[in-house]
Length: 128
Image (cartoon, rainbow, N blue to C red):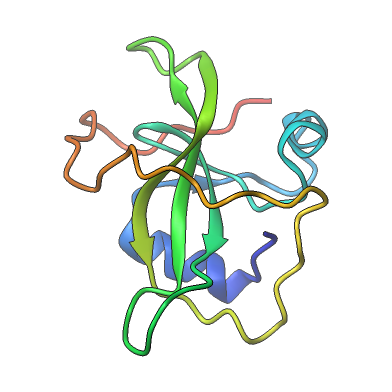
């Protein structure tokens, strides 16, 4: 899903990550592969945010989902894999209304974990 600026800030408040800059050359290929989303690079790889449609009152209403993991220690190559929940997040999904991905994304398998140790150092940068 595409996120508003406020929604991106909410993700950045809980996860060390770098959102894709508007107009980045990789966005065309990423959107062709994964649909229209706001993409983030984090310590474990490429992420997006998906709503948690089954969230009860007071539970996180979205998931940070990993779409690809770093293939090397230098964080220079990504290896795509089935979506994996990295961590639950709570963000305001009501304003503006979220934009639906071009291809529906099935509920991701919970293979990732917020307890997985993150590589040390700052969030990777988008190169272009």
